[in-house]
Length: 257
Image (cartoon, rainbow, N blue to C red):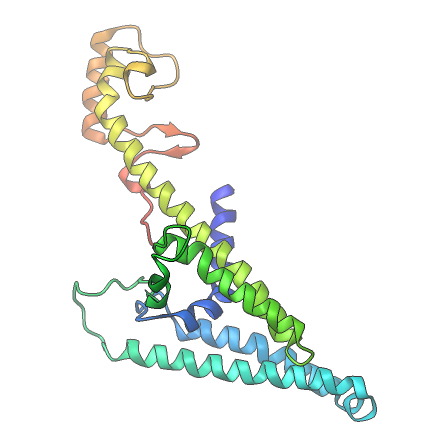
């Protein structure tokens, strides 16, 4: 249930996060950047704006305050068009590679980070690396832009949108890093379990002597029987549940999933 919720959050947050990535990165992988997602986000701006314009078109002509809302909507539509054009430019660059298959490009590549971040490497009070840029600096940039936009009368709605996109993108990146770490920990735990299986299962050594690995449950009292079962485990590949996760190659999660 927890894994499903985390995966759902990752999928849902990837769409608003595209607002950030499309303006800050380039050279995306073919399967990471899809124009379908660009269309979805474009429509998420255009459809509500169109509804507002249609339902309140007479209000704008009669009330002075209505003009502020009208200009806000026009700014949103202008940004949506800019976003669509930028997305199409990225997609055209991806399409240049055609339908070739090779080992030169990772299709889930999340794009080159803007090199301008690294120009402040020596001036920043903290280390600037890929993780810091993705998890904190990129989201913070759009949160800041959003806050500035919210101060303007004609850019309030756009600023509010960019503010939340920055927050959601930060959440999306944090989830990605969390899942990546879990994948690495799964592989480490599987390696330890394979190495310590004989000592933990056959020799019944305590967890302090098997790097923390232990076989839960009542073990067969006969050591010869445990030895025979161990040989079967080696052939069939051992599977042990650790913190609700089964350790086996069939259940390995790729870092990019």
